Image 1 (tube, rainbow, N blue to C red):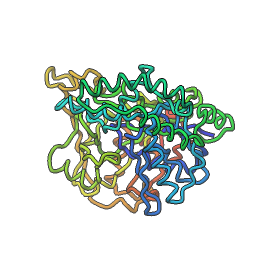
Image 2: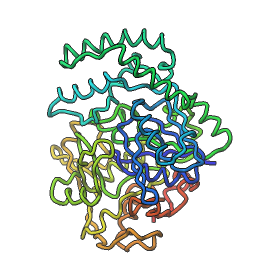
Image 3: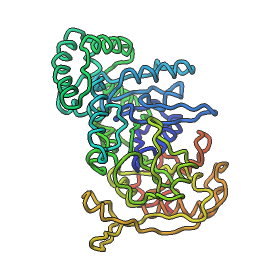
Length: 445
């Protein structure tokens, strides 16, 4: 038995869907614990591509139960569309359970999200415009709706009338957006409630009972550590907690139930939207990484910013999440490069101070320049490698260097998008706890 959290160790888009899909083969349950339809996980199985936003990646295994926890926010139309897509492709979704307490994205959330981004102009956060932030805002403000509310028609309509009156004032008088019609919104969302009713459950209890049966439970987050609202590059962050601690809150289980935490990071670094990105490459090489890595958002299609691997970010992710091991993805994207760079520290332009830990003060971060180690590339294909020893020597050295700098062993290496294009160095689920091995590991050499 092992209860394992899979967490993004950069700014999101690290390949968590592929890693979760790989690990789901040994799992009995996969739990999505935060985020909403702004997340996009792409899984490729047998040449078939599945783009998932709310349904856990484990749904592609027929015997794996899938849970969407109360820490998520749900756009019912998008969730039902995703369920329909899976059904049309022959995937059994009867194993899906969704938290009654998950908050609902309403039409005014999407309108407010887009209107506020437009108002910010050049200072835009870079949200997906899907209403995720406003949904979490109303949740914290205790003015949101939960999925269970959609099943109680009269009570739902009474509260909706009160809340919509205020939202319409904001939309019309501040943002010059047409008001929403109460009857239309009510009818639409009551219908969603009826369609989702077969999947709704007390998911915290469902997960607890699975753990009590000593099942293997995998916790899947969205976004990445540097987008966490408390630990990330605020205000250019998401509105929830992608870090490992968020798995306990969002799924409703205690921290003592967690056995291992696996961090997922690309062999380089990417970011979508605004915000600081110390190792960003704005030249032809950055464009080449984007082209070769197909770095375009699963949800929005926006081009991702690309840069060198940032070990300062990696140290933060290791510390905040308590990482036991790493999964490094997209190693193959670097195959053609004659040399690579690893950012090992930052240097402040204003004081000359060298920082090895990520600064949480935005003003300090603005003064930071990346300090690099340069290592030779391998200029050979890694796509067909299935064992670590089959990788080119310089590729092996690159991975070993990352593991040494972060003091976190690497258990998984992805050398392509396919499920089979994966090297498992050590068992990522049942391997040793990093705290117990004293800084040693299969690829901490």
